[in-house]
Length: 324
Figure 1: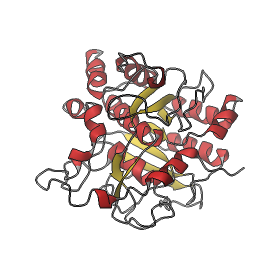
Figure 2 (figure 1 turned 90 degrees about the vertical axis):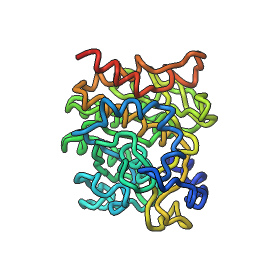
Figure 3 (figure 1 turned 120 degrees about the vertical axis):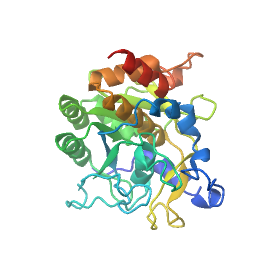
């Protein structure tokens, strides 16, 4: 069965917010000129966390539409990946979604080029399971998760949530098994909640996955975010500036600048994957990483759609250090 995840549909709607809105607005005196426009980094208290951990020696697999393999803010950040759509070892992004997700997680930081990544010391493993139109099969996604875990991924990001997929997962779909396999290999799996403004439990309750809802710049739930997953957390997901392909794609036909702002739980998930990478570098295992992120999330207003609350990278890193 072929399908188009609604995360990518949301991506299409926001792709019109091209880098034309950011060109010329950066501060050339800063190591990353567009860093001041990445509000999510500050909302997560990532700079405070970086003084302790930047996620060195950690590999984040982006199981998605692939990555722009020559992007100046991503080149050198990549390890070998795989393309399950074309069946080769060149997971080039022909959509745009995966490149944006990868930049949020671990773009080059302090390199004099535009944006910063959430885990500046981590590497990105591009695993292409979705085609140029953003569609893909459950089978390929499952294979991508297993391949990433078997080839050394420490964190696996799944920005794939959509209602049809969720319904199948509730019935014991193959992704539950793939995620459990990855966890057994020592990988933390982080997944987007989806963008249907719907309350649901996307995975079987015993599946070891950290589900991420989206929050806005005020720390409140994004209007589109799904919610209700067991022990879900929230992270910035509205107007998120990150990398896009430096060539035109199906979803970015008028933007080859390499940067743009998108919204969705797809953007919130890689921020949490970045925090997971920081904790992995500190020596925590998958269960401890998920527990630490959840325990340090903040939801003072007890807003249902935020789940356990907004992730705090600095608090998580501090808590991890205290456990040593």
